[in-house]
Image (cartoon, rainbow, N blue to C red; front, top):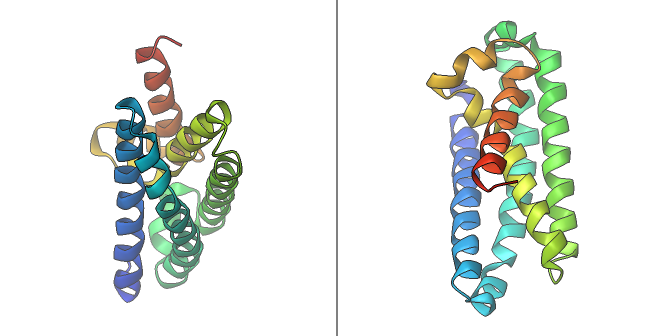
Length: 158
């Protein structure tokens, strides 16, 4: 961990954890028919998404600036940054579409799911049991994401 930016990394981790917890809570609220509460809590998702994008686009370049050597196994600092910026753009775009179409579940639901899957790549790439997938750029980000998305679709009968 880049010691110079530990508070930013912790804030980023808390925002990411908050997003996943909120996604789970929101899904449970819809499954249990509590749509009104889902709509009341929903704006918190927009706040968390904005925090994730802002913190992610701040933490990644600062981490590269202070510790460029830790990204050697990931293809170097430039490929890492390119991947992180694409990930932030993808996440922000998917959440934005989901928010615009929040009254249309057939659009809102898949956008929020895809945003959640896309944003999980950093944590999944560090997960010890699938770390071998993370050894080759760009699979260090997208390999675990694709694997988790495939498992989700398989278990949901898609």
